[in-house]
Length: 153
Length: 201
Image (cartoon, rainbow over all chains, first blue to last red; front, side, top):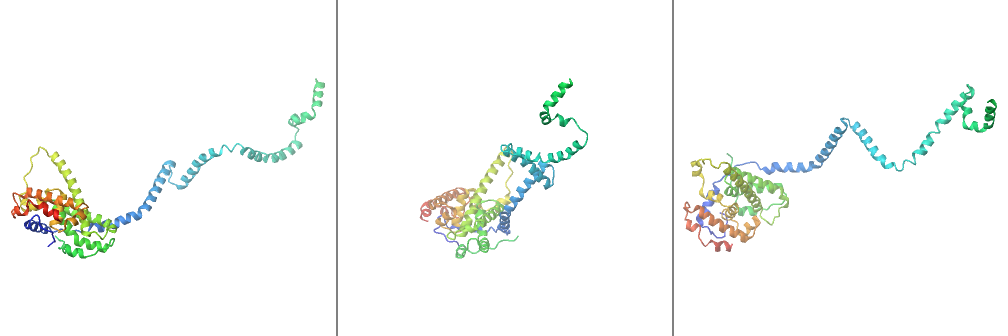
């Protein structure tokens, strides 16, 4: 009999309450906490992995939507082509000074070869009026040309 | 139908010690306390399936917090607290559902009550289920499980004074409900001077 300190509602009440509650027989059901516990632990352990998988999935979907291709190589190329224009404008304030020397350095390189190849042809081949019309040549023999021209006229 | 056998009395259960976080000890607590918690809930909730559901949910919640349980409080009382709180929430929701159902069926004829069910339904349990769940829980914990006011107060997380008031109110309400049919000496079962006796505990 459970202990009580006094019986303020009367002995009949406690007897009846005990009788009616003892009549109730709880049905046997497997403890629900045994099913819930491993699930909870597993969920918490797998949560970071699930988060990573979710983020990668979202990134892959967005990349697929942006490129229209399921090939990750294409995504990488797209990223490179997207990032380059973003990076270049930051460099542009500095670039006007730099490209000019680069062009100067690059441009003279093919010239000597072309001159070396063309000069012998011009010298060896037919005489063209162009070398004589060059300003250098004109300056050297300006007096003779004028005199010859004026003499001819 | 398989039935959980009767477990040792509360005094024997108190003699057992539980280690917080130990699954084996929680299994032992479940075997000891489940029938008693179930009966407490059966006195609050009308449907046995609801009582079973609440009891199982309470043990699931208790198992989740088992590592944080402090041995200074009785384990069964702690589970009782969780279970009673769940039952209170359950009855509150059920009441809202009932109000909605009544409004939905307003105007329709109400069918007669099942006479077989009425005959098998004990009056005292019906009366207990009709009073507020906090009052019913106080009555069951005090007069069935044998807790004193201090233990009930610790279990339910309220003051002893509140428990005294709840027991008094529960007695008054039960007397009002059971007066016509209570045949076990209603006058002696519900004396008018209960206030002093509850206040002494």
